[in-house]
Image (cartoon, rainbow, N blue to C red; front, side, top):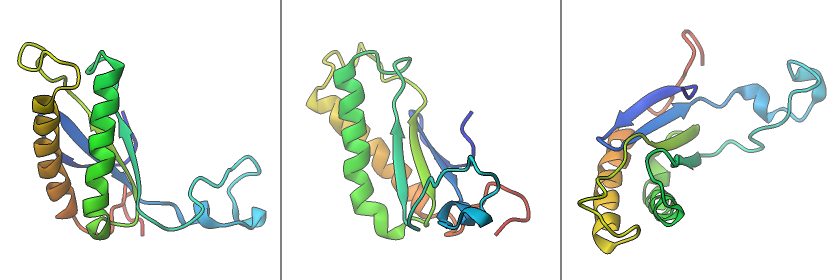
Length: 136
């Protein structure tokens, strides 16, 4: 299970969001929790990752096509997303009987349509996500 809040879901995708800890930005070693803490996020920004497991997309060409669609859509919605770490995760496979080709235009269109719905839902969520109760 991914840390953070599930912000939006569609039949095939889930959107996870986690607030970026203020200590992640500190370059001063004295303010870090432990000496082994590494800077994960150097600047406050919108961070987006794509997770497309082999379990749901067996072929590499399909996984790569889905990731390209996710990153392509993110540029359209970046201005309305909260400053946080976001992950778009494929949570179910597309029917191989309906989409026989690993990277067909029909599959890409179906993925893009569902991602548009997912991004629109995620953009409507509050601007300050927080995975901890009582946090900032």
